[in-house]
Amino acid sequence: MAAKTVVVLDYGSGNLRSAQRALERVGADVTVTANADAAIEADGLVVPGVGAFAACMDGLNKVGARAVLDARLAADRPVLGICVGMQVLFDSGIEHGVEAAGLGVLPGRVEALRAPVRPHMGWNTVERAEGSVLFAGMAEDTRFYFVHSYAVHKTDGLITRTTHGEPFVSAVERGTVSATQFHPEKSGDAGAALLENWLRTV
Image 1 (cartoon, rainbow, N blue to C red):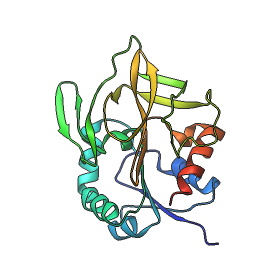
Image 2 (image 1 turned 45 degrees about the horizontal axis):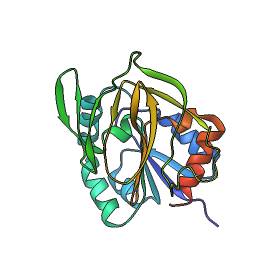
Image 3 (image 1 turned 135 degrees about the vertical axis):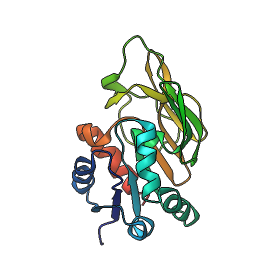
Image 4 (image 1 turned 45 degrees about the vertical axis):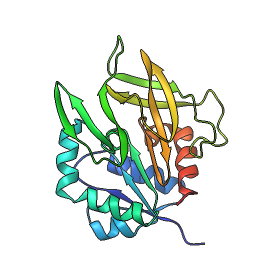
């Protein structure tokens, strides 16, 4: 059987090559590109992201990401957002008192994480949603790698939570849209298992 094709969207941000390598490790045929047609037509689309919400949105707007996502959602084609690539899928994000519009694929607002130590950096467990596909077959104490100072506290769909100072949404599964606040590409075997689970939905 042919490998599933996955595009890692290149909009000037994110751990593009590490995401590419992690997906190739679990058998995907991966292309890193900003080409809208390729991003729409691929079996799966990954939206990575590091840095500031507003800066990532600037890059996404320049490559027409909203139209790409609209087309994929209309065709029921899976999308996976990672870290800030998850955050930009929500309605808006506020950083340093300035609010920026997100892509609006998921309902919710990205806000500062209320915790004594920020960023939340390092390994942490998750309280998975019942019926989760992403975490299927994993032990309850499985750890993933996080690095972030902002988070979503409320949204719709299958919500997986993690606690650092307070509970926050560490993953969400809603229709063909999946997203993780942590970095599966930096999470070793656990991250590979999650990407393999996602690839099965593609």
